[in-house]
Image (cartoon, rainbow, N blue to C red; front, side):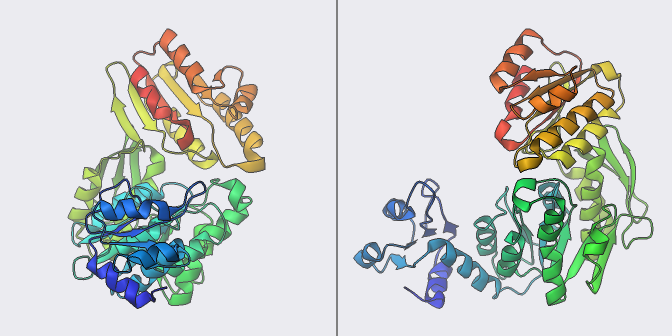
Length: 433
């Protein structure tokens, strides 16, 4: 096996790091990662043939066939992570880690928009926020080119954030909130507090800085031991902000008194906007640039997107869902201006709730019954519990069944919220609306 310095030398000679032989490979360092049903080494020759400069494999015999192009390692994933950590040690720049139960990707995108007004920023693309994605993000940072990095960290069990922090060694950290996401893996809300809190505990150990959302009652206590805390958005916080309205786009007043009308919808996104403003102010981005960046950010990827179709106004928030984000979205939607009878919600199963799934879906049914909504459509096996506690809901066990109903009952001149877990794929219903 080549030592880490030799592997790093090959990395420095390469154009980028790749883990997918189906993607363009010109000049890349290809890591042949293994999956549950495949061996990465089987794709390494293809990657080299397509232009990869080097391939990292766990097959010593294959590596010996061409040592000039192959590097042997016992475990390509471990090698990828160790290489990323080694590279991080060469970087002299702030690294901001962002995690949380809800809104971390939106917050990351907003923070990037703000910081890019002053700095050359590298950041997590898409949702590459796990034990593979974080190393890939770190290895995409170029010394001398980038001045600051934003690393999104996702987790569905305790210990995962701790691992990602060891790899990325963040100097700054932000936890968006603590909510009921991935209950199955974390073992309940207290497990989520411990798991997400691993970021603040790492910062405490290294003397880092935490951005603390004081609207979430748990976060100030979780950050209490940190010597440097930047708080937001309360009136006595470091960087206060005020929610002016959310009908439907969020309007907020920043710490300097400027009012910003964002393109993002839902009052639940106010803390995400305020977080980006606080981070920008801390890193000395001019307030006018902060406001312009927040106003210019347009959500994508089925996250809080306001879509005006030929027939309806649709709030498409179908990237993911858990009890906390579902409740926040529903409360925000129900308070939007407009007649209750014109409001429609189309909701899909919430995944990864474990033993809490039935109870949480039943609770959702009770919430839906309490809100002023015209039509409620719930889809999926788990949503059967929501339908049982809200008999006014239209229930469909599968998406095709819901599609058939929507085709025979076309919705017109309505406000519609679509929300569900990623695996439900509810964004495909948009073409019917």
